[in-house]
Image (cartoon, rainbow, N blue to C red):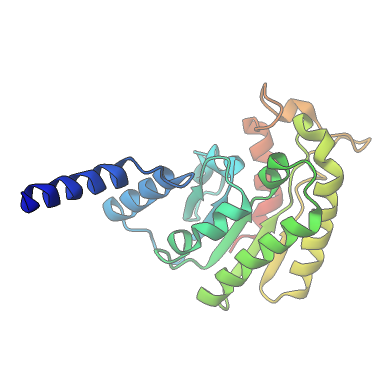
Length: 218
C-alpha cells in the first residue's frame, strides 16, 4: 500500500511540475539553445541582444554584408528579461561586439515608470556583460520614439540622455543615436518608417538604422 501511495505522489509531483507555468520568453530562449546546438555560433561575431525591433529584423545579415551577425532579439522583451536570461544570452557566445536595443517595452509595461529605473536596469545588464567580456565593444541603440507610444516619449528621452552619458564614460562603449535619422527636417518622427501598428519598422526604417550603425560596427 505504501509503495502504491509513493508512486501516486511521484506521479502527482511530476504532473504538477510539468504543468508549472514557464517564465515569459522561456520558449524563445530554448529555441536559441536549439539553434546553437544545430549550428554552433561563430566566434568574433557581432551579437545583437534585445527586444522586438531586433526580433523582427530577420534579414539583418543582408544589411551588413561581410559581417557575421548573431541576432538574439526575442519577443517584446524588457531589460528585466535581459537581466533574467543574461546567462543564456551571453555564455554560449564569444563575440567581438555586443549591440543592445531594449527599454522601450519597460516603459510600455508601466507608463508611470521613471527613466532612472530603466537606466539602472540597463546598467545592471551592462555590468553582467562586462563581467563576462571585459574588453569587447558594447553599444546601446537609443530607444526609438514609436508613434503609438507618444505618451511615453518624455521618459524615453530622459532614459536616452542618461544612458548616453553613461556609455560616453565607459571604455569600448558607444551610444548609437538612431532618433535623428528617423525624424524629418522639422524634427517630427517619420510615421512612414513604421508598419500599421506604428510600433515596428518597415524595411526602410531598418535601412536607416543600418546606415547609422555601420560606422560603429567592428
